[in-house]
Image (tube, rainbow, N blue to C red; front, side):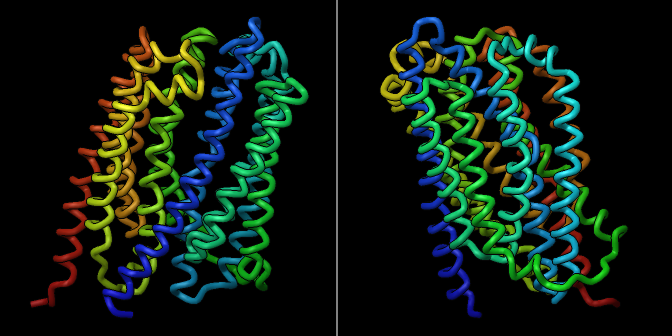
Length: 425
């Protein structure tokens, strides 16, 4: 395939995935219009919306991106090396293993339910249990979405994303407007949206996981799986953890205001994420076949331009959008935190591209540094949380630190790869 054809295919696939991602994000974002309905009941106001934001952050944070990228890596590598039978065995094993992990987590939550309900000031525990069930499908969603991504089946990956948004919005709207279920009802929409998306992904990936299995090297697999899981986990912790800390340290009203700004700011990832998502399995495939790829530079440039333009747009239009969707009560706090939130997303999105490139090439030296950054960030949030702006300033600092770490390891990987290509003597 010529370079021009490869570029054309890349832009076509990333363009479709971008459309699907934005459509999915818009559908999920539309759920937040229901905040106005919550405000119609004075005793509930923003507390229920803030509680929904905390539930949602738990669903987003725990499995998500790390598992998807690991499965994308393993799928792309197995297909490049014609190891489909080993891949089938791995998919089935991970499927059952994720259920086991979820079951243990569900038991732990049940045992400590009183403390959790008290810490989060939850009056109605139904939303918590719906969230626990949603976590099971959130484990399975990235598992099979990663298989589709590694297979470069971006068409059905896009439809999987959109079906998640369609199910979430439809069910949540009925639950809130018809049954007055509020946070629990909105989480029911999240659950059923995930169930629909998982069903589609499982069906579309059936040609891979239904294949007769063959034994695979467990020790070698762990060496390939654990580093990217930790690396992407560190990135995703930076991307999502702030909402849970805000929920722990601020009142329900304040959390609701914060979630409104966070929802808009994270939308930047809906815009730029598909570029890295399409890049990742291509680089894995090229690396497995020892082929040269210069895709990362183009993706980094595109991500930087789109993220910067998006952040500037949020600074200018964000307060108006917050007023339109959530109401005038949200504008004062959201206007204060939105510039910091949107600004933090720019270096974080660039770090995502660089980190994805390194992990796609199995260059795992960056992983310990990324984990240290994430741990230090979590510790810093326990110390610097006197205001919501302080939380976001902490996020901004550690996003920049991660962005500084990744180019260092990218440079050394490029230098090492060039040295290895030189002929001996």
